Image: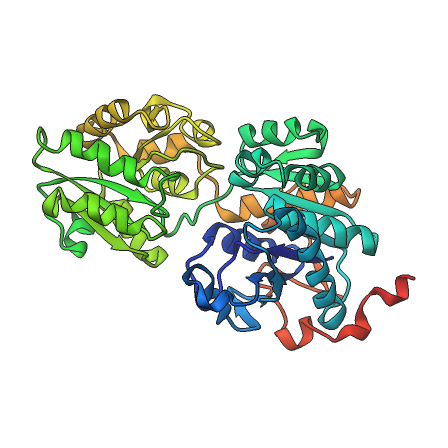
Length: 431
């Protein structure tokens, strides 16, 4: 089976740390089927002059990422001008790319409801194949509130063969947009259990040059107001005078980074902003902390929460999106209302000093690996094709067939030169 994945939230050579959850899940999914990725990049005249768009503009046209052949087609995008046109323009751009370079897929997956999922549905209907749309959080919680976008968003979701949500709460949000519940599947993201596992806190702190005597609260994510980055600093400022032995570390970057730096300056060296870090370094900071803090205003199911629990670290977060599904026990952490700074400050103060057993946190969380997540995703794709789901773990299943040859769990995708034949291989024969 050949699957085409279309998404603008995927890494590229210029931004290798973007959307690691998609990178890991899609790489694990390639154990079950042939996968090609259109990791799209928005383009409009003069885009390179704007800092938000200029970095991605230099991404290569093709690359191999974690064994996956990835193209970076540009799609015509009209930011804030006519958002209702972005879905049709995206679909037209991808149709052109598909016709030029790609054999027809058996299933098209759009990761993000709009415009990616909308475009996936359009292409799938043109080719007569199933479409699966994966939704993440803000594409449902935020975009559905925009009158200019909502009709197209609803159209794409309702016409998708199946919709994948990363949390139960998000499933209900999709249902509220008119999709029957029996066409919506919840597939939780996984975690790299080799990287995120209980480690010695003292050793991790020593490796990072942090004092073993001080308490450490950690924020990991985009430095954005909606992610609660400024809330985390404001709440820490409330507790800092009473707890001089507690520090806050902020890992990440984003549009509100300067505002975060300005707020952090008021606290001297008590707040450290590291900027964006490789995943391996993030895992070390998680191991070094006493608790993770993520006071988002809206979310899907943030992978950093899963990674923190898999590392045996408790979490303070907001009662939004799929977070309550993950923090299912008070032992795992505390939930507060978004924007409630007094409650957030009190929860952070407790979390910095609460004793707990990291091994129990990991066991209680029940975090799954990426192969389990990919297997569940693959079951959804099979269901979209009217086929029976996978019933046994990958290790127990018969070897899959790829390109007519038996394969094993050690199968690796063929070279990109074989995976991207020219336009003559498009499904013209289907006509």
